[in-house]
Image (cartoon, one colour):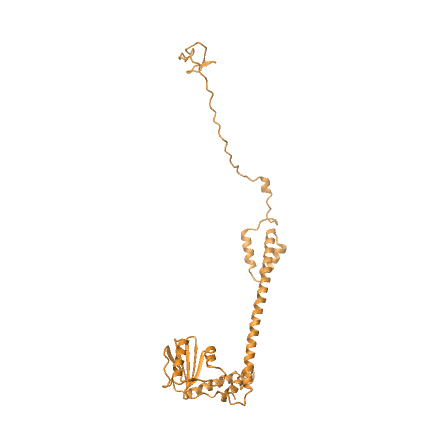
Length: 304
């Protein structure tokens, strides 16, 4: 195997210990020439940058074509125009049938389908609500007819001395609102005013023999009527029990046919007399109203 000088790299003949070129002594042992090491590296893959070709650019829909995309601003404008009553429906129909762009036509057709669905739902809800209201009106009419029949039965007893016969005539008065002035609502209000005036003539403020109401604030509304504010129904019931101890007894003054429990339970009211005073007590929304008079008004005379 040939040897080479370690100084100048010239080949040295066998058996020579000095380089014949540069004179550098050489090792007599044979030197093996080591081949250079080759490093193997893994090649790195990189994503090539996409550059659209001219063919791809040429395939875009041309401006003004039916395939041209609809922009976000155009969609917003269409939705705002659809919100206009009547005009919005007309424009939506026009776009759905003859829109210049496919996307515009598809959007308008989808909007028409949604409108149709909402219309059907609205009609169904309206029919259900209308049926519910109609049933309520029929129930109210039936109740009014029942009350009217009860008043008519009382009015038929016109020859009776009972004031209920006079109250029965209220049916005729209320039914003659469109009649002459003597039978209309104006006459009814005049009669009520006459009754109140008679009660005022038969009273002179809170009677001295009548115990004071235990709570709330007493306000004189008329000389026969006092309102107590800031009270409760339980306080009124307690006051009624005290009046019973004073000799007052429940009395259905005008023969309405109501028991004491029915009047207290259904009307939150109470009528009573001790033979000298006539009381009417009622409760509503934290206010107790007490009517007090020395003589009971004759309401029958005002409806003849």
